Amino acid sequence: MLGLVGLGARGRLTVVGVEQVRSAALRGKLVYAIVASDASKHSLKKVVPMLTAKGIGFVEGPSADELGRAVGKDSAAVVGVVDSQLASGLRKIVDQGSSGAR
Image (tube, rainbow, N blue to C red; front, side):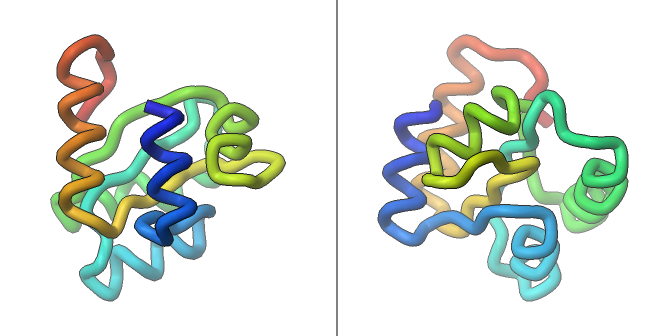
């Protein structure tokens, strides 16, 4: 999953961080999101209700440090996917082996 997220980030198919994900969701551009397993309650409170209200699927992923490294940052509480094909690929990976997908 992290490799695919990293490729998506290099291809500008993702947005990184709470505010960027919220903005993309509000503009109707967000397709899917990966939320760090250790994201703060404050970050979760800002992102998860919006994703749920907008009907945007998301998965609890790796730690914020791991997620951040995949996209070239120190850490990331959430990474949003703005490309439907990338989102489809991530969903397949999640469906094949992980739990926590919504």
